[in-house]
Image 1 (cartoon, rainbow, N blue to C red):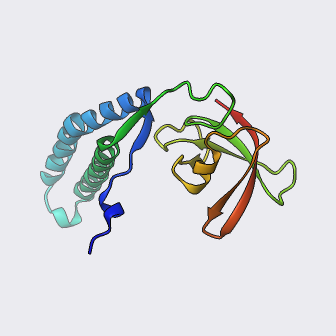
Image 2: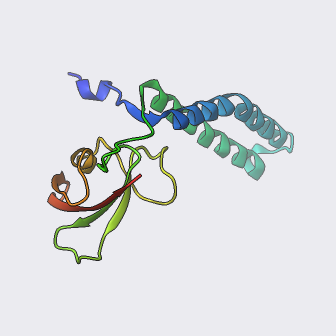
Image 3: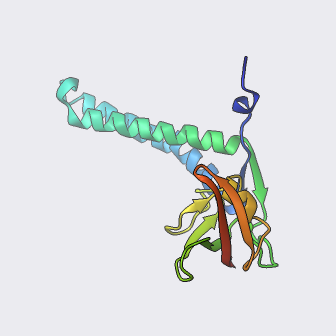
Length: 166
């Protein structure tokens, strides 16, 4: 028996600019990046005993991290939907919005700010809320002053949307 949802890939929503940047990064990693890593590994091998060769192990570790990023980019770019960078002009939450939230029961000034979108779209240090997450699903299309509820792992939560910016 197979799990049909496990076999389906989730569509990644990206702006054209981010899509272009990720395609360029993937191209760079699979060409120049792989050549450079291979050169580092070869240079480290020339130093002798591989069991105690820190340069060799560091180069192999860097290769593993780079190949992991290549696989991540390939999976992300496999099913992409290009979305409009302008977003909603009516002040509602959309991909690329920054939203300020206050959880029910918190003090008036105790708010949290999130970026709504893909981690690849994020600018700055804001935590990211995916539009496909339970919180993201109830936020998209709503505006400042709205109150929404969503099912979190710890139970139902109520959130007040304090502000939305682009």
